Image 1 (tube, helix red, strand yellow):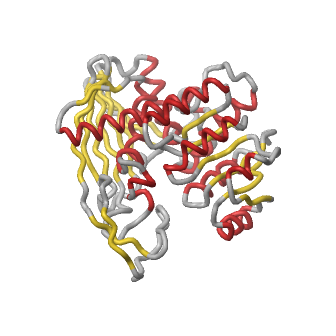
Image 2: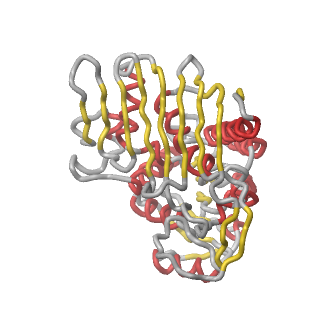
Image 3: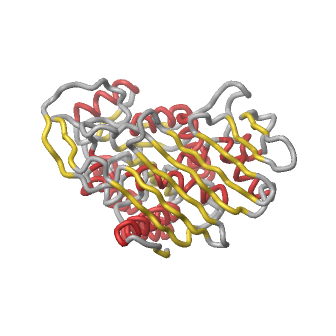
Length: 381
């Protein structure tokens, strides 16, 4: 059990995901906050939480809370993260960190100034075999990286009747598919290769310029069956899908395909890294396998097994080989990394988790991608 009290802000899809992962690592979840008091009480009852809060101010006034998890709509992240840091609270914030790079730069500087733990929840870094891929790159097994290509595709916004606050720019930001899921891929590729993006050329598209908003909000990945409900038309100016060509510093190139309207793909992140010695490929819907491609000998499929991977990857594995670990386990490992660090007390030590600086970088990349798509050409960062 960590000697830290935690409050989670937000009761949508991702809030309870945070609670479950926190419980699995032995964190002390004090309570849940939401403007919808009934929903907060419902979530608190389900998870056996002692407290509910209606506002962030109530959370920050509680001396039992040392860590705040922000699981709210994007437009609230900046003000909430700033308030929490100024109130001497450690912060875990869902991505994107804020609505624009001006806000993220301020939050990054504030996090550095306060010295508090400040993490952006790019949990997909924590698939053990992606950690293994990073280790292979760092060891030199992959050689010089020539290219990094991949995709992140879903289908939860396939129909014009699919609606969520994320599709509205004033709540989610000017970018949606890229900012919502594309930044996961961008962050992961940076974490594995260490390569910084130098320039981008993007083409983003909207499939449904008008969506039908139901009388009640639709939760992300709720899995609910389609129901006939009253709707109203809402104009949409955030992208449903798009392609980005990438130039990395040092000469490597890449491409990224992002879509939230690809039928049958529920939550599929893929990358393929081509190096001068070998290639690596990963698919998040088969997260316990890493493909290793070779020219002069048979290809391999490395299984997620603590006896077969590096020490770094082994630290993110809980179960023996054949006992599969997936998305919920990445949350567990991400939070374990953060809480182990904060609990150790040495805030000057290198931070093993995605920081606010990482969150700032990803938003800056998003802005360059948006500008490129609008202008129709390459944009340097």
